[in-house]
Length: 484
Image (cartoon, rainbow, N blue to C red; front, side):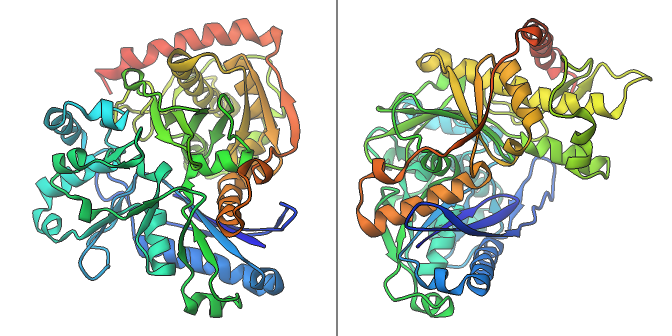
């Protein structure tokens, strides 16, 4: 039996996976976000630990024999979050998250300080990444910066609390702007540009390697045997790829989680910073990946549900499983700024085309389409960076909706496949990495593709209308940029 823990933004998921590769049980705990100032997004690092422990407690209560049989644990996590620890190993301040946009000026400064940044890290300096956050802390909270002993990412902090070891995997480390992504090692040059040194960084391992052993107190708490290994794990999207069996060059998926991602596996480091495409290490040795990233995907729909004080399912129900064509309303899903292709933390969301006769369903449909249009921007960026993507598997919370899947197929112009266990892809991938670390099996034997539940192909009847709607939608960002 194997355990996967996914340290997300809105919650922590835990999954138990059997020797046959089936998901036996799941548990989750919610997390709260803090936005103390405009563009700020923070979380209490200890809330991740409490949620992770609580989720495993729930599994141990309902499936004690299965939990007792766990041989390996894998971790997946939200990327980029700056968790600053003092010499006592305790957080010095709330973690600054991936969707925090305060460090725009520091990005400019970082690129000035380190002209070789794009070559080494393979990415633009963006406020979401970790390195600019540390420059911001140095400028605005110098007393805290001087006390920083270690900088960990979210899942690495959870690992530290569960094992006592400070370790990071390559895929998550690639999102810091401190990793030499091609060489898969920390870059002293990039660290120096933010006033840090190698001793501030955790030890690096591959995602499928053993990183540590579960502390005895937790093994005893959950009835496990001693020496349960903890794998290096992966950033959330690389972990989702492992859960989807996306481990061969060219494999691709679309994630509609809190954020949105178009992801493609590569067999080499293939940076394309000019189009704001991310180039990161994959969770397995010898593999990398490219990503286009939207900062608000399913989060846009969740935001609308909150504003309308209506459950998401109730918002979607009147639309059924298919719409005839585009909504007359256009929605820009830039509620937290945007990465690919704009790299604009200050970008704002917007509805355009509202009329007195506009109904709720037209607004809901516009949100679904706005995210799909943003995904098309990402698809175009990845295609320009490395060739066409002809189909994608769909994962994340948004994958539950056949309606959204069909809209994505119509907008993207490619086949979109809903897959089994698509909502727990990252946690499933983490569990698979835990298994690889525990057993040393070949990844191709374990990282198999899930069963496809349904396939959605572009409808000829809607294609031209969506192409036209996308053309108008693309004109909105530059038109509104100066006024929002």
